[in-house]
Length: 423
Image (tube, rainbow, N blue to C red; front, side, top):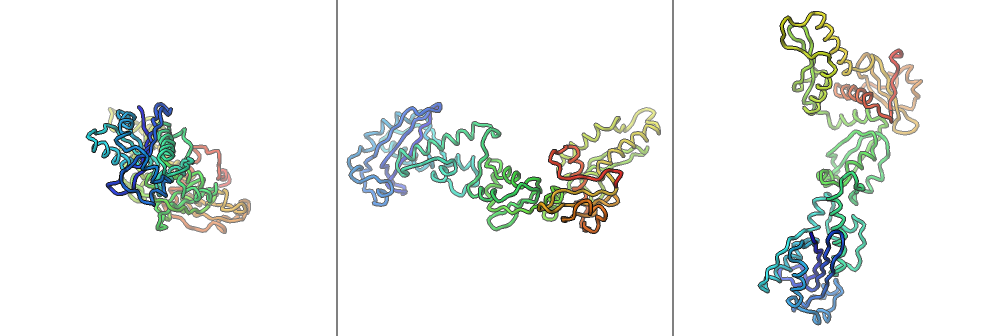
């Protein structure tokens, strides 16, 4: 495939505009094969504004060839290849119209780097050639002349082609110009991250372990993040030091929308079994927002059961078998509970001098707090530091956090829990 990167300067923006300069750079297999440029006599007066903008003089225009004199040289370079331009409709309309006037239609495919930029790099406030050069750090000199602009468009085309052909994981992360200053303000601490629109309204809120890393992942330029990139105008953050407390704070603004739950049921013979059903307040053991997540978790549970529930078989199960089966399910239910009746978790706070605390009392989430008192002091009387502020959703979040925290064995462990003997 041969691409011909083009730029055309014109007498203006009006529909009956005429060409005053054209540049064509033939590009194939990563190599420039040919460069063609010429000033064109438009045979009509050209305004002083256009002459000043381009730097072309009226004498140069008057002494240059008319389009029909260079038409075949242009057609030879374009026919059968791909005409590439930034805002291709503007350039292609003039060129094809000029060939049609000669009674010689030009057969050529087109590709617009402006539209391709909008597709691959969502969220930019402007997609002019100057803006795209700034985004990719392309040095463009002597703008508004055909050949320099065509060279800039070629560099842009190469960058866009690399975005399309290179696997996402191998690309260096890129960020929109107005997002880069926002990222510089974020610390590497756990907290709540607020993505705000141009009206200052938070349209997305996240509880994260690393504010900067989370924002970088979210704001990296990629087509699948189009909505976020286009809407995000500002970032606000709240440091908590604790990822769990960050989840508590997020829940205040954006409650979890449980849609599915796993319950523990009992059949007529007294045999217990886990069952997936639609959410109903305070009647389940595990709660989920998505059915896929619930089904995946239920499968993991069933794999831990030596023998799944049998609806019917000759003779049925013995009483001992049912009791053993129920015992296994009751042990699995411990995953939906706190590790022990009384539990104090602590970790980093919002500043180096502060700690974060979460208290579990009598098997229920009591509350959480930030305090400068050392854990050794708080252990003597946790309720003097930790205020009572909790609900069923926070308790479910805390249990899930502890379960996942233990299962994933996160190296960067921000929390410590008391030994069973101390509970």
